[in-house]
Amino acid sequence: MIRDIIWTIVDEIREVLINIDEDQLSVFAGRLNRAQRIFVYGEGRSGLMGKAFAMRLMHGGYQVFVVGETITPSIREGDLLVLVSGSGSTSSIYNFAVKAKEVGAQIGLITANLESNVTNISDFLLIIPAATKYRLSHEPRTIQPLGNQFDQSVHIVLDALVLYALKDKNNLDIDINEALRKQHANLE
Image 1 (spheres, rainbow, N blue to C red):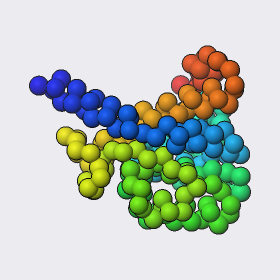
Image 2 (image 1 turned 90 degrees about the horizontal axis):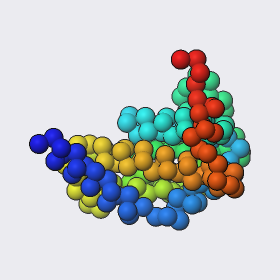
Image 3 (image 1 turned 45 degrees about the vertical axis):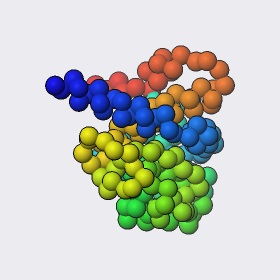
């Protein structure tokens, strides 16, 4: 039955989320709140999760850009480049990380692979212990194809991270929905 598949996927994602390092989440939120501007990049479905994250950050009042869009300015010192890559080895992601480092920007990598070339040059990491399309030996088993488990887990984690960062940034218990609704698109 399809419902059995749904619950298996939910259980798999729950297992991934249980194993995320709370300290990495706290560091990530702090870096978001200290960055002058935030740039986000990923490819494929991971890139879509990155765009969803960028949108929520914008709703939260952060100055954020998606790398590759026509209105994205140049990155500079004091900025933060957030990269989303299950493998951490996509060549364009590595190249962007190198360029960002050259100008003094910070690099935050969201990945499932602790041993990638981008991991080695990143300033901080958020390891999502999920399966990717490569099915490396340290990755969990999943019934899902390709990087579905990673991307779904990233989406949930980044939504939670925005909530945490906003509460930390504002240092009070604000009505998050109302605050974000004010920034939501109104030319619809």
